[in-house]
Length: 223
Image: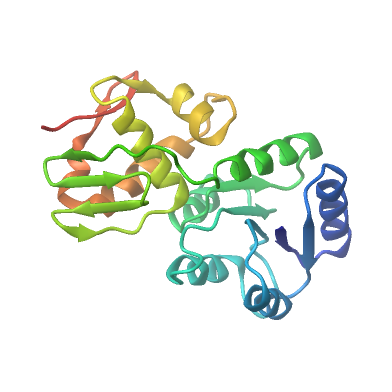
């Protein structure tokens, strides 16, 4: 089930219609009140949020979802007319897993929704990764820095896991985008850089393990 919180009736009806016709079950809500009521009854697989809403703005809702233990890893896509680079950075820094601006193409939107849903399946990797105080268990979805649990968004967790799985190798932005987000790098998209920055910040002293290889990409180091 996909929840869409969008106060524009035309957009809400169009998107839910497109999702349902693509074999994805969806439900739309026009107000945050309706959305929170539905969240109490059933948790969705993915949430799509507009930012400019009555009652409560989408970024506040995003923050509430990320703070709650039962929704902190829930895939969330922002679907909004706020299209400046600053707006995108704020949304991604706030914990959004993807950021789609209006107007958008239906085919691309459906593809990006499906890419997020594919990544909600439990990770089968039973291997545990460790490096200089940083601990990662993909199977248990646990990240610790010097023994203390660290909360990451789904995309941040997948990014760290991808880096660990290819430890020592430099991964380009194109490779990371294709693996984690499922679409090609267009030369202007700062999604990877933003997520690397927030990931480093959350990892504290272990953030330095994520190295920037200038002009190429990123890799994870450490003993």
